[in-house]
Structures are given as structure tokens and as C-alpha cells.
Image: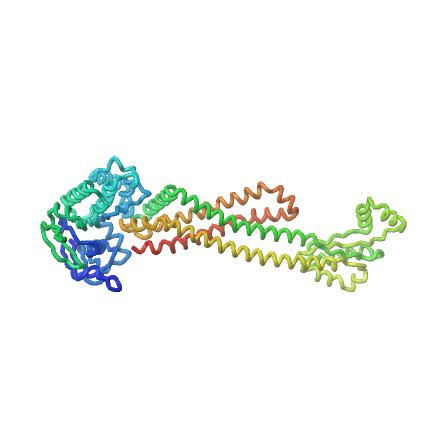
Length: 227
Length: 306
């Protein structure tokens, strides 16, 4: 599903965000990528949805080698990967419904399909009754659920969540993780980038640990090993 | 995605942007209109200056006074001769009797002059020709044309020389006003460009995060840029329509004052705006739209890279 082969990412003049990273994530896996701030975990996520391009190495998603992806191909890639961010990245002047719809509208989905899919996804994230609200009228947890709904609406095979609980309290963070687990159970590959020890330990899923831009451990049913 | 569907969505997002950012939209549109008002005010001043000078020039005429013994045939022959020139707009024949009547009318309250006239006993005036030309530049040509031996001996006097100073002053003033108007218009257009450029940049800067988010959820550049481009075009169009309404509103409401103030010149002011409305406002719309589009494209470029 996702294969990193000897991937490095350098930022001039001397920053080496990732060095010789090789990683294989199978379809349907739930992988937590952990590491301290500045370890390179977010860079790894950004390479997945082509916000950054690798300096060296090869990244393949499905059959698509995205190592040298053209700018014009990036929108197509992003329509196939669900992305969830720590700061939600919702469009402030669009309602919950419109935020979720937007991801389908830019992909050219028909009105009929949008009318069918969006309410289903909002139901999954538990926001059917708040579809007409604007992001500012929602709590942090609710905003993150909108963000997840937007990421899911394409029915992506991969969901990348970069610190999705970073701005949430423990209860809301737990809700979001449960939601991600549910999504994973439906067959979506989930890549969770986090530095939250409790979440990682509670998940009991595969854990890839990054330090100084290198993978230092990769354990099935792993734990948060950094101090 | 079909072009129709894509266009429909871009139009929908455009109107959402405009109405959900009402104050930003309102301010942007207001600045567009104020810019056009500035440009049109300069244009109006130029038109007024041109019209007034044209009216003054039209009133300037050369009169050829013939000797009292010159026959009417000679004078009408000279009239026909002058009318043959393309430079001549009109030649009015004023007979000796008409000249006398005119003189009496002018001095009806002046007993001394009227009694002096009576003492002379005969009409001291000869026939005359009042010539108006297409342009004041043509006076010299007409004066030279009348120096032909066929008529020169019959001409007692011409008042062309009296007008020479006035004409050259008008021409100098016209040229100076033309330069000043051009410089002023250039300055205002430059200010207008700066204002529009910055207004659009600010409007897009406000939306920079949204542009990034749109890109992250898979919108292509056209889909992100589309609503902003359409918004810029709509602002340009609405500003131009408002400007048309303001211009003709002001001209209509102040028709009386303009006519009182500028007299004959007022007709050409109204005519200029009525006859050239499509040209004036069409070009203003095109210039505004082109400027807005360029600025939009330029301002968005860096936000579209991610």
C-alpha cells in the first residue's frame, strides 16, 4: 500500500529531516508514527500527501510512484488520501456540511452522489445535527470530527492523521482515536502521527518510532518507547 | 469533471465568498468605485476644458469691412469665394443697412452718438462679411486668401489682428490645460492602479489560509483561483455600472447648473458622455478588469504553490 525506499529529505543548508527511511505499510494497517518534536514524523506525513517532495529515495502509494510527482498531479493524489491535521484546517466561512461537500465538489462528484454520501459521513462522525453550523460554533473535538468527515468523504484507502489530538482535551482525544479505529476497521489504512504516549500505548497497534530523521524502531503492537 | 459543473461550482463559491465576506466585498467595491470616480473626474475636467475652449474658439470670427462704395455684387462674390474654402465654416453677409440698424440698436441709449449719426446724414457703414472658420489656425489662411487683387482693394479693414492675441492665448491655454490634464490623469491612473493592486492583495491575503486548505483537500489551481478571478471581474463590472449611474445621475441632476455655468459648451459636455458612454465605460471596465485579474493572478501565485 505505502512503501518508502531509502527516503531522505534535506532542507538547505544543513537540516536533515529524514535520512534513509525505508518503511512498508500494508493495506488495512493502523500505524502510529511517533517521535519527539523535530524528529521528522510530520515530514514523513507531508511526503505522503506531497506537501513536500523527497530529496532522495522512492515513495510508492499503491502502484503510484509519487517521488517525482508533478504539481498538476498533486490534487489527484490528495483526493485519494484522507488528511487530518492538528489545527483542523476547516474553511471558516463554510458550514460543516459545506466543508465536507467541498472535498467532493473539487473532485467533480455529481450533486446526486454528494447528497447521498455527505449525510452518511456526517452520521459516522456524529455531526448530523450540526451540519448547518460554522466551524467557530463547534468545540475542538467537533471541529476535528468535521475534518475527519471531510477526509473520509472520498472513501480513501489511506487516512493520514497528523497530531489529530494535539489541540484536544483527553475526552475529545479519546473520541477521535475511537473514530480512527472505527475507520480502520472498515478497511482504511490509517497512519497516525503523534507524540501522545497514552494514545499510542492504548492503541496496541504497530508503532514506528522516529528520532533524528531515522526509524529507530518498528514494532507490531508496540508502545511509546521514547522518554 | 464537466466544464459546466465546474463552472457552476466556481460561480457558487464566488457568490458565497462575496456575501460571507460582506464587509471586505463592500470595501473592495467602494474602492473600485472611488477609483473610477477619480478617473472620471479628471476626464470630466478635460472635457469641460476642451468644450469651453471650443465654444470660445467658435465665437471668434473675422470680419472684413468693405469700402462704402463697394457694390453688393462684389461682396456676394467675395462671400462665394470664401465659402469655397474647406477651412471656412460660415460666411455671413451683413449689408450696410443692417450694419447701420445694428449700430443704432446697440447705441439706442446714447443720444450723442445717435445725433452724430443723424448729422452725417448718410450711412457711414459699408457692407461686411463675418467669417467663422473650422479652427482658429485657419484665420491666417483666410486673411491671406482675401489679399487677392480681386477683392483686396475693396476691403477697408479687417479685424483679424485684434483677435490674433486672443487666439494665440487660447491656443497656449488649451495646450497647457491639455498637458496638465494629461499629467493629472496619468497621476490619478497611477494612484488608482496602486489602490486596486493593494486592495486585491489584501483581500487575497485574508484568504491565504483558505487557499492552502482548498489545495490540501485536492482542489486544483483553477478551482481555487476561479472564484477569486470571477470575484475580481464582478467587482469591476459592478463598479463600472455604479460609475455609469453616478455619472449620468450627476449630469442629469446638475443639467441646469452646468447649462447656466458653461452656456453653449454644456451641450458638448452632455453629448460627449452620451455619445461616448460605451467607449468610455467599456474601456474603464476592461482596464479595471485587466488590472484586477493581473493582480489576482500575481497575488495568488505564492499561495498556490503548496
